Amino acid sequence: MTRSYNSFDIAQAQFDGVAELLNLDPSARDLLRYPMREFTFAITARMDDGRIRIFRGFRVQHNDAKGPCKGGIRFHPLETLDTVRALAMWMTWKCAVVDIPLGGSKGGVVCDPHNLSAREQETVCRGYVRCMGRNMGPHLDVPAPDVMTSAQHMLWMLDEFEAIHGSKQPGFITGKPVGVGGSQGRAEATGFGLVFTLREALKELNIRPGDTTASVQGFGNVAQNAIRLYSQIGGRTVCVSCWDQTDQASYSFRRKDGIDLDELLGITDRFGGIDKRKVRDLGYEILPGEAWLEQDVDILIPAALENQITEDNVSRIGKRVRIIAEGANGPTTPAADSALEHRGIFVIPDLLANAGGVTCSYFEQVQSNTNYYWDKDEVLSKLDIKMTAAFIAVSELARKRKLFTRTAAYVIAVDRVARACRDRGWI
Image 1 (cartoon, rainbow, N blue to C red):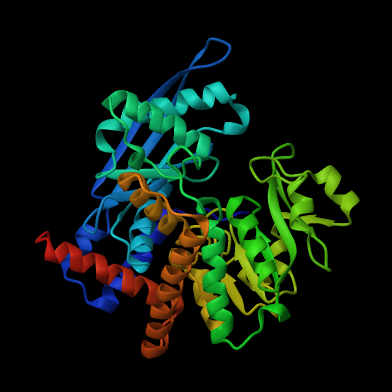
Image 2: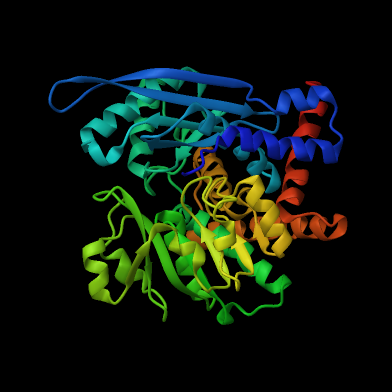
């Protein structure tokens, strides 16, 4: 039987352990252990057939001591308030670990965009902003794309927000299309940021990228861009997995001499689903969904959803694996973390590895608010500097205090947020 995990319980347990290490006082623990504000609401939408459907929406603002809240909006049929709470908390730590002046938030709508027309999705987007428009904005809480949302969804939300407020406010939202206030490099940012930290981890372990292979869970934007840059630095990806909407199941696709990213992109839908019928003709083996975890590779990159590496499957990780770079939010449970630490696997934790997305979102926010835009090379160069500096800080603290890398990242992040709360006189 598949074990059930509550992401918010996991996020709180991670925080509790770090609070003990930092010896945080009770008021700091009480403040940071829970979100500062939560919103749940009903979005009414007229469907193409004339029916009215009600969609449940969430927005959680965990902490804004360091700056306006920042966090994506995801569309997912299994979305829960506890998942959004956890993701908002993780966003607070993520912004803090890369030292950008933002707090953490997250949003979601219980829906499956696979089953909604473009017009119906637009209606849901505009409805979300009508429900939350008074409690979000460039200086309050700035949304962005997340699971199954895109630049087009962000533009619909921006248009609704500007219509409500009667002014142009491109800094309200990030992840917009380039040319309508979006930033160059935004599409690549999360995947490239992950590989910037992976490059530094390989240096630390004295491993040449060209001598490594990787297996990736997920084939969305993060995975695709991580695979591309990893290939450019010399690595070879041999396995990817993705969700098959038709079968309602996940599959892994393996080619031992390495996947061809552009070839796979040619048979991939906009949600990152690879056409199972066509992929076999290209010489790929079709394996069960969890097979990505068992591959004989040096690097694992979970880049899908939370709670994917657990105490139930951690023992199936290939013996050769040296590094896990977490492209997803919360992909590893605490019990699995203990097993990874015992095995000596170098984990680049999610709040560091996938912080390239929020860092570039911050860059976009700055550009939108000043109406001055940078070229792609400048964006990616600034991103590389930020991600590298954050990795070095986490790695040095881990070595100095003999901490697991995730713990070191949390210590840096929680300490920075607690100090900001203390300096403001909140605690």
